[in-house]
View 1 (spheres, one colour):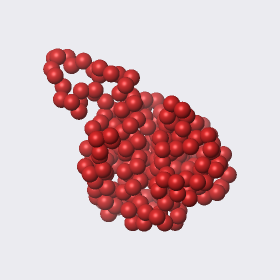
View 2: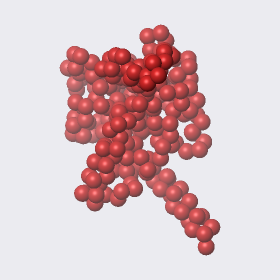
View 3: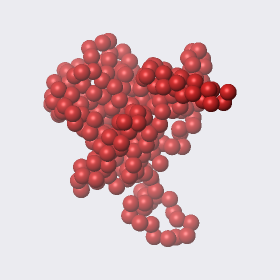
Length: 175
Length: 72
Protein backbone atom coordinates (compact mmCIF):
# COMPACT_ATOMS: atom_id res chain seq x y z
CA UNK A 1 0.00 0.00 0.00
CA UNK A 2 1.28 3.43 -0.94
CA UNK A 3 0.99 6.84 0.69
CA UNK A 4 2.23 10.25 -0.46
CA UNK A 5 1.86 13.91 0.45
CA UNK A 6 2.32 16.80 -1.97
CA UNK A 7 3.01 20.26 -0.57
CA UNK A 8 3.01 23.44 -2.64
CA UNK A 9 6.33 25.15 -1.87
CA UNK A 10 5.03 28.45 -3.25
CA UNK A 11 2.41 28.51 -0.47
CA UNK A 12 4.13 26.77 2.44
CA UNK A 13 7.63 28.16 1.93
CA UNK A 14 10.18 27.25 4.57
CA UNK A 15 7.73 25.04 6.44
CA UNK A 16 7.27 22.64 3.51
CA UNK A 17 9.19 19.78 5.13
CA UNK A 18 7.24 20.08 8.34
CA UNK A 19 3.90 19.91 6.51
CA UNK A 20 5.12 16.94 4.46
CA UNK A 21 5.86 14.97 7.61
CA UNK A 22 2.73 16.20 9.35
CA UNK A 23 0.42 15.18 6.49
CA UNK A 24 1.93 11.76 5.91
CA UNK A 25 2.32 10.75 9.53
CA UNK A 26 -1.37 11.43 10.27
CA UNK A 27 -2.52 9.26 7.36
CA UNK A 28 -0.07 6.59 8.39
CA UNK A 29 -1.57 6.67 11.86
CA UNK A 30 -5.04 6.18 10.34
CA UNK A 31 -3.73 3.23 8.33
CA UNK A 32 -2.29 1.64 11.47
CA UNK A 33 -5.65 2.17 13.18
CA UNK A 34 -7.43 0.51 10.25
CA UNK A 35 -5.13 -2.49 10.46
CA UNK A 36 -5.76 -2.75 14.19
CA UNK A 37 -9.40 -3.45 13.42
CA UNK A 38 -8.26 -6.69 11.83
CA UNK A 39 -6.84 -7.79 15.20
CA UNK A 40 -9.35 -6.24 17.67
CA UNK A 41 -8.06 -8.09 20.70
CA UNK A 42 -4.37 -7.87 19.97
CA UNK A 43 -1.90 -10.51 21.08
CA UNK A 44 -2.72 -12.24 24.34
CA UNK A 45 -0.05 -11.74 26.96
CA UNK A 46 1.65 -14.94 28.01
CA UNK A 47 1.42 -13.83 31.64
CA UNK A 48 -2.14 -12.48 31.40
CA UNK A 49 -0.85 -9.12 32.54
CA UNK A 50 -3.04 -6.08 31.84
CA UNK A 51 -1.31 -4.15 29.06
CA UNK A 52 -1.01 -0.35 29.19
CA UNK A 53 -3.49 1.35 26.79
CA UNK A 54 -0.99 2.32 24.09
CA UNK A 55 0.44 -1.18 23.84
CA UNK A 56 -2.84 -3.01 24.25
CA UNK A 57 -3.31 -3.70 20.56
CA UNK A 58 0.25 -4.75 19.96
CA UNK A 59 0.78 -2.93 16.63
CA UNK A 60 2.85 0.19 16.16
CA UNK A 61 3.83 2.25 13.15
CA UNK A 62 7.34 3.48 12.44
CA UNK A 63 8.21 6.05 9.82
CA UNK A 64 11.59 5.65 8.14
CA UNK A 65 13.09 8.23 5.80
CA UNK A 66 16.22 8.54 3.71
CA UNK A 67 19.11 9.96 5.69
CA UNK A 68 19.16 13.60 4.56
CA UNK A 69 22.72 14.26 5.70
CA UNK A 70 24.23 15.17 9.03
CA UNK A 71 23.05 18.79 8.96
CA UNK A 72 19.45 18.07 8.01
CA UNK A 73 19.12 15.01 10.21
CA UNK A 74 18.22 16.90 13.44
CA UNK A 75 15.90 19.21 11.49
CA UNK A 76 13.81 16.31 10.22
CA UNK A 77 13.89 14.69 13.63
CA UNK A 78 12.59 17.93 15.13
CA UNK A 79 9.78 18.20 12.57
CA UNK A 80 8.65 14.68 13.39
CA UNK A 81 8.68 15.37 17.11
CA UNK A 82 6.62 18.53 16.56
CA UNK A 83 4.07 16.60 14.53
CA UNK A 84 3.99 13.90 17.18
CA UNK A 85 3.70 16.24 20.14
CA UNK A 86 1.77 19.31 19.05
CA UNK A 87 -0.25 18.40 15.99
CA UNK A 88 -1.99 15.44 17.56
CA UNK A 89 -5.64 16.15 18.25
CA UNK A 90 -8.08 13.75 19.91
CA UNK A 91 -9.23 12.65 16.46
CA UNK A 92 -5.73 12.11 15.14
CA UNK A 93 -3.86 11.29 18.29
CA UNK A 94 -0.69 9.55 17.24
CA UNK A 95 -0.96 6.84 19.87
CA UNK A 96 0.17 4.04 17.64
CA UNK A 97 3.15 5.80 16.14
CA UNK A 98 6.70 5.26 17.23
CA UNK A 99 8.06 8.24 19.18
CA UNK A 100 11.03 8.77 16.88
CA UNK A 101 11.53 8.89 13.14
CA UNK A 102 14.01 6.38 11.70
CA UNK A 103 16.81 7.08 9.23
CA UNK A 104 18.30 4.66 6.72
CA UNK A 105 20.56 5.11 3.74
CA UNK A 106 18.96 4.75 0.34
CA UNK A 107 21.85 2.62 -0.83
CA UNK A 108 21.40 -0.05 1.81
CA UNK A 109 17.61 -0.02 2.07
CA UNK A 110 15.62 -1.71 -0.74
CA UNK A 111 12.35 -0.33 0.65
CA UNK A 112 13.59 3.26 0.36
CA UNK A 113 14.49 2.52 -3.24
CA UNK A 114 10.87 1.52 -3.81
CA UNK A 115 9.84 4.79 -2.10
CA UNK A 116 12.09 6.60 -4.56
CA UNK A 117 10.21 5.04 -7.45
CA UNK A 118 6.86 6.08 -5.92
CA UNK A 119 7.75 9.74 -5.33
CA UNK A 120 9.48 9.84 -8.73
CA UNK A 121 6.25 8.75 -10.42
CA UNK A 122 4.13 11.30 -8.50
CA UNK A 123 6.64 14.06 -9.18
CA UNK A 124 6.88 13.35 -12.90
CA UNK A 125 3.06 13.34 -13.17
CA UNK A 126 2.81 16.72 -11.42
CA UNK A 127 5.55 18.12 -13.65
CA UNK A 128 3.33 17.33 -16.63
CA UNK A 129 5.29 14.36 -17.99
CA UNK A 130 3.43 11.28 -19.32
CA UNK A 131 1.55 9.74 -16.40
CA UNK A 132 2.17 6.06 -17.28
CA UNK A 133 4.19 5.21 -14.18
CA UNK A 134 1.81 7.18 -11.95
CA UNK A 135 -1.22 5.35 -13.36
CA UNK A 136 0.41 1.97 -12.75
CA UNK A 137 0.90 2.90 -9.08
CA UNK A 138 -2.40 4.76 -8.59
CA UNK A 139 -4.55 1.65 -7.77
CA UNK A 140 -2.10 0.79 -4.98
CA UNK A 141 -2.50 4.08 -3.09
CA UNK A 142 -4.40 4.00 0.17
CA UNK A 143 -8.12 4.67 -0.33
CA UNK A 144 -11.36 4.76 1.63
CA UNK A 145 -14.31 2.40 1.31
CA UNK A 146 -15.71 4.50 -1.55
CA UNK A 147 -12.48 4.23 -3.51
CA UNK A 148 -11.41 7.85 -2.96
CA UNK A 149 -7.65 8.39 -2.95
CA UNK A 150 -7.62 12.15 -2.36
CA UNK A 151 -7.07 12.84 1.33
CA UNK A 152 -6.42 9.16 2.11
CA UNK A 153 -3.47 7.87 0.12
CA UNK A 154 -2.57 11.03 -1.73
CA UNK A 155 -2.72 14.25 0.27
CA UNK A 156 -2.48 17.70 -1.25
CA UNK A 157 -1.47 20.66 0.89
CA UNK A 158 -2.97 23.26 0.69
CA UNK A 159 -6.27 21.52 0.16
CA UNK A 160 -8.07 22.68 -2.99
CA UNK A 161 -4.88 24.34 -4.24
CA UNK A 162 -3.56 24.42 -7.78
CA UNK A 163 -1.96 20.96 -7.56
CA UNK A 164 -5.15 19.43 -6.19
CA UNK A 165 -7.18 21.02 -8.99
CA UNK A 166 -4.85 19.44 -11.55
CA UNK A 167 -5.29 16.02 -9.95
CA UNK A 168 -9.04 16.46 -9.72
CA UNK A 169 -9.32 17.45 -13.38
CA UNK A 170 -7.41 14.31 -14.43
CA UNK A 171 -8.97 11.81 -12.01
CA UNK A 172 -12.41 13.14 -10.94
CA UNK A 173 -13.59 9.76 -9.65
CA UNK A 174 -10.76 9.55 -7.10
CA UNK A 175 -11.53 12.90 -5.42
CA UNK B 1 5.25 -3.33 13.62
CA UNK B 2 4.15 -1.55 10.46
CA UNK B 3 6.75 0.47 8.59
CA UNK B 4 6.26 3.48 6.37
CA UNK B 5 9.31 4.05 4.17
CA UNK B 6 9.30 7.58 2.81
CA UNK B 7 11.49 9.41 0.35
CA UNK B 8 11.35 13.03 -0.74
CA UNK B 9 11.64 14.71 -4.10
CA UNK B 10 10.23 17.74 -5.86
CA UNK B 11 10.75 20.83 -7.96
CA UNK B 12 10.82 24.54 -7.21
CA UNK B 13 7.00 24.49 -7.16
CA UNK B 14 6.18 21.45 -5.06
CA UNK B 15 7.66 18.83 -2.79
CA UNK B 16 6.57 15.18 -2.47
CA UNK B 17 7.09 12.79 0.44
CA UNK B 18 5.84 9.25 0.10
CA UNK B 19 6.43 5.56 -0.23
CA UNK B 20 5.17 2.10 0.71
CA UNK B 21 3.52 1.02 3.96
CA UNK B 22 4.58 -2.53 4.74
CA UNK B 23 4.12 -5.02 7.52
CA UNK B 24 7.46 -5.81 9.13
CA UNK B 25 6.82 -9.52 8.47
CA UNK B 26 6.79 -8.89 4.71
CA UNK B 27 9.97 -6.80 4.57
CA UNK B 28 12.26 -9.73 3.81
CA UNK B 29 10.14 -11.06 0.94
CA UNK B 30 9.73 -7.63 -0.70
CA UNK B 31 13.42 -6.79 -0.39
CA UNK B 32 14.39 -10.13 -1.89
CA UNK B 33 11.93 -9.68 -4.77
CA UNK B 34 13.43 -6.25 -5.52
CA UNK B 35 16.97 -7.61 -5.44
CA UNK B 36 15.99 -10.46 -7.80
CA UNK B 37 14.35 -7.93 -10.13
CA UNK B 38 17.55 -5.90 -10.18
CA UNK B 39 19.66 -8.97 -10.85
CA UNK B 40 17.34 -10.02 -13.66
CA UNK B 41 17.60 -6.60 -15.30
CA UNK B 42 21.31 -6.28 -14.58
CA UNK B 43 20.92 -3.30 -12.26
CA UNK B 44 23.61 -2.90 -9.65
CA UNK B 45 22.55 -4.43 -6.34
CA UNK B 46 23.78 -1.50 -4.27
CA UNK B 47 22.20 1.20 -6.43
CA UNK B 48 18.64 2.46 -6.28
CA UNK B 49 16.49 1.75 -9.33
CA UNK B 50 16.56 5.43 -10.13
CA UNK B 51 19.91 6.77 -8.99
CA UNK B 52 18.94 9.36 -6.44
CA UNK B 53 21.55 11.37 -4.63
CA UNK B 54 24.77 11.30 -6.64
CA UNK B 55 26.26 13.36 -3.85
CA UNK B 56 25.70 10.39 -1.54
CA UNK B 57 27.63 8.19 -3.97
CA UNK B 58 30.51 10.65 -3.94
CA UNK B 59 30.45 10.68 -0.18
CA UNK B 60 30.63 6.88 -0.03
CA UNK B 61 33.48 6.85 -2.50
CA UNK B 62 35.32 9.34 -0.28
CA UNK B 63 34.68 7.14 2.74
CA UNK B 64 36.01 4.08 0.94
CA UNK B 65 39.15 5.96 -0.09
CA UNK B 66 39.83 7.13 3.45
CA UNK B 67 39.23 3.61 4.78
CA UNK B 68 41.64 2.21 2.20
CA UNK B 69 44.26 4.77 3.16
CA UNK B 70 43.82 3.88 6.80
CA UNK B 71 44.35 0.21 6.17
CA UNK B 72 47.50 0.64 4.07
